[in-house]
Amino acid sequence: MAHFVIMGCGRVGVSLAHTLDESGHTVAIIDQDDRAFRRLRGSFGGRRVTGVGFDRDTLKQADIEKAYAFAAVSSGDNSNILATRVARETFHVPHVVARIYDPGRAEIYQRLGIPTVAAVRWSADQVLRRILPEQSINGDFRETSGRLILGELALDDAWLGRSLRDIESAGGVRIAYLTRFGEGILPSEETSYQQGDILHAMMKTTATDEIARVLAKGPQEEDE
Image (cartoon, rainbow, N blue to C red; front, side, top):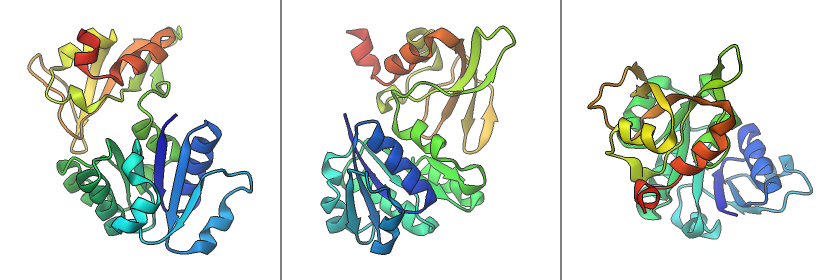
């Protein structure tokens, strides 16, 4: 099981904390107002840390140095981005995501390599899909027979710079399109996977768990 750190004990933060805790992971949730922790269930087994989510000492109290992923889901765009950058650049957390209320600013942060989700299309499920790469793929579209599904892929950072053909071959999928800086792009034979890209692929419904497992590993691990 992995360790997760969440900044913001609002509706989304609480939903994430409960889901991860119930899945057997260790969780630390940060909020400036300790009264916010009243939203958590009595059965919640994670750590409650009172403090500013981008403060290094506060993050250390939440065991950020052991974190597999960090999710900044407070009500402030600037705080979320700052905390996410500290988690990635100072503590080298491999999986991060920030909640952004202003969709226009999201593109800027995507260019910095920080996955973001705009509040207008926000859900706890979307952040889980970004910080739990081995979670079963949730589909956006299922064809009428039910045999094929179009879903968003979650890849290890080791795939960055690799061609989409390599990803298709390793996962046994067909990439239909990718989202880059908020815009849909039809891939060509020369297209490679870049930081911030979201890949959407057609795949067999029965193979989604295996595809998620394979792509959550780096290509070197798969090549061995």
